[in-house]
Every structure is written in structure tokens, then in C-alpha cells.
Length: 362
Image (cartoon, rainbow, N blue to C red; front, top):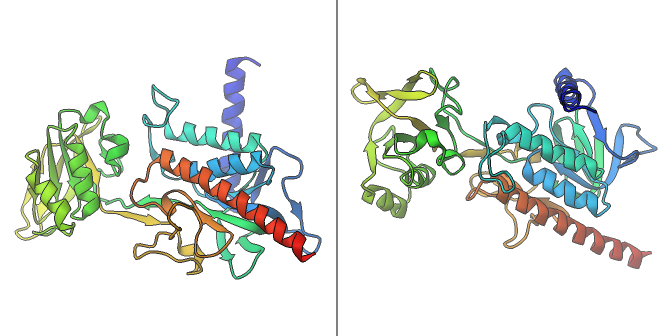
């Protein structure tokens, strides 16, 4: 098959998958093996599996790849709206090993997905509505079907909070970002003035990191005092490249092809001023996707899944968590992938122990 024909075929398949996901009807199920899981005799809409994975980013797919290679025949719920998570909104990923020239985020996610399928993962393009973790097998339900699983990996990620104002969408990924570590080294930011919005530890970390690349870093904060820890405040205040812009909020972003500057409104005086910057980074936190768990797993004060130190084990035996849904410190594609590997190995060991226990009970 010629390169052009192959490209057309891939594009057609992607389009078909997106149309099926957008239809909102029955779940779309993808599998590279004839039987990755079997339907229950009692209910044809129920699937049974040793391992279910919820998520569609690097953590979920790495877990799926390891689990499938271990012949666990995993079922993966990738969601129905924009599978792939935050990487799908990243125009170019330069810090994932193996791609020295960078790779578009959506293309990287497609590669994850293709590899998962190639080893036999059954992928369901539907969103999980609820889970029942009260007893094993665990019950994972979407609008159209239910999966009964002996083990479960939660890899639903976290969403960076974004501010909305005129120009915020237009210049997204063209000067506006929510991840300094991911995008700060981009050539469009080097030796140019940059801005960070926020007043907590996340914002201070972003600002300090950006001093490596920007000529100056402005921290825009609505109040006249920071919420960050004393240590982070001291580090930021002591950095000669960082300048605080107090009592201010961004009301507009402007520029030509890329971001050229911001309009700021002083919340005390109401005065609007302009700040010429080539980059704006949101440092206002993340929201982990844990609401669907219904309080059945232990979460920390910020809503992240709590895992046992040195493990991906959660408060419920047989349930594991990987990626940004349990990691509020690093939040990188590569660390998510690493924890996905850990979760798959932890699940495999758990299932082995479960099998031994079941044989003893027989």
C-alpha cells in the first residue's frame, strides 16, 4: 500500500472513530483480538474481564500495553469526548523520549492507542458513569454497558484550570499555556517577557521555572498577598527576574500570529493597562477527574486519589491509580506513563495472589 493511500486510510479510520464517539448512542468497542472479554450469559450488555482500565492518556495506555502483554485481556474505557486527555490540546510534545524533533500531542496519543490495540486491549469509546467498588468483581458502568472486573486501574487524569477572557482561546498553544515545564523551553518564549497568573505554590513554581528561559517573568495576582507557602514566596520574591503585579487580572490577550501582550485590570482602581509579553501561563491549579468515584476511594484535600507510598495501590484492595489523577507534583506525560506501568504490574501481582487464594479456597 502506498504512503498516500495509507495516510488516507488512517485519516478515514480516525474520522470514523470520532463520528462514532460523537454519536452518543451505543458504545463503540475496538479490539484487535476476537475475544478480549466475554459477554455475560445473564446480561448480554455485561462484559467480564480480569482488568478494567479507565482513562485514555499515557498512564492508561501504558497500563493497557503491559496488561495485554501479560495476557490479562484488559478492557479500557477511553471516554466519548476527546479521548487522550491533555495531550490532545498540545500542539507539539518535545520532552517525551523517542521524538527528538517533537511530535504533535494528538499523534502521540494515537500511537499509544494503536499500540494498546495491537496487543489485544479492548477499547470502549464511552464514558464511565459510575463504579461500584463495594465488592469484587468491581462493576464499571457506562450509559450502554457494564463491565465486571477483578481489578481496576483509575487513570482518568486531571484537567488544568484555564481562565477565559477575550483572546484566551485564540492564543491557546500560540503563547498561552497551562504547563511551564511542558512548553516553557519553546523558542517563542526564549529571552522574552512572560507572565504567570496565580498566587499559589503552582504559580510560584511556574514562575521560577520560567526564569530559565524568559527575560523577565511577571506574576499577575488578584490580591496584594500570595497564597503560596512561605518558602515558595521567599524563592519567588528573591529572584531578580520575577516581578509581582498585584491586585490585577487579565481581561484580554492580543497579538498577531502569536501572543503579543495582555490587558490587565486593576481590581482596586479599575484602571486598565497593557503588559507586553510573549507568553502567558495559567498557574491556577488542576481538577482531578475523580467525581465519578462517588467517594468510594480515599482522596486527599484537593481531590486526588491517595496511593500507598511506593505503590499504585489505593484504599480499596484490587483498585489502583496511575497518572495525574494521583500525581499533583510532576504531572508529565512520561511520569504518567511510568506510573501506568507500575499500576499494571501491581494489578498483575494482585491477580496472581487472588488466583492462589481462589485455588486454596477450592
